[in-house]
Amino acid sequence: MNARTVLGALALIVLALLTWELRWVLLVLFGSVVLAVALDVPVTLLRRILPLNRPAALLMVLLVLVLAGGLLAQQLLPELIDQVQQLVELLPQLVGLFERLTRTITWLPDLERGLLDGSMWQRLQPLGGQLLGFAGGAASATVQVLLMVLLAILLALDPRAHQRLLVGITPRFYRTDMQSLLSHCRAALGGWLAGMTLSALSVFLLTWAGLALLHIPLALLSALVCGLLTFVPTIGPTAATLLPVAVALLVSPTAVLQVLVLRLALQNVEAFLITPLLLSQTVNLLPTVALMAQLSLGALLGLPGVLLALPLVVVLQVICQQVVVRDVMDRWV
Image (cartoon, rainbow, N blue to C red; front, side, top):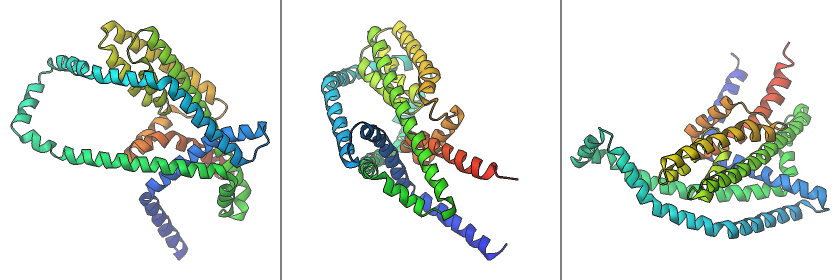
């Protein structure tokens, strides 16, 4: 083993340690790249239609998003606030229902006696510190989201300058391939974002209509949660079903069955028809790869890792196809 090999190994170890220490900075940076691509898609379409420069097109897209968000909030926010208030009013009934259901569980009296004798209480004392840590984490997450949005706007304002920077620090023999790789990553990520946005919108509208037809309370709130959690495939749709099912418990057992059938049908339509149809021309993710990425990044980085797992897998898949397969494996003799 020569000195160059040792220095290379040490450099890789230092780079890995530095990456781990800066993981939250890199997570915010990647999230801003995802948001920048989401902004770049309508900006590019708008510049094809109107003779606008990039800053003017970006400003117009941001204004349209703000106005559309304001109009949508004006139409849906009053009903949404009313349904949130209804949920708060229904919570005591839900708690009472679960209390009646838990009376049939035999080990709960032992748990209650453990709490009363103080032994279990001592174990639960660190919970207060954990709640304070959760509040601090929420404040930190808010700051990270604001930084992410600001970085995304700056990236979308002049993406070619950042692309030239990445190409410039690449060895000369690979600069053409690097430019092609960045273009493929942008196209795959933009296609994934567009497809998932349309899929989430479809799930939101279909769930809202289905729950409204079944006369389930809080239909809009439940549909909004289901639509947003569509961006977290495999885990999100299952978790989103908990809210409408819990509300349907207050109506009747028949309503619970109807909601379960509705959500099961919509999940299958979204998983096997809507999403594959929308993403067939852009990116094709294996369910096992998507689930393992969510579990791995969720264990390492928590909820932000789960939310950014799939766009990261989209980019890594393009890198593997363009670099590992094409430039390494296909040339191996």
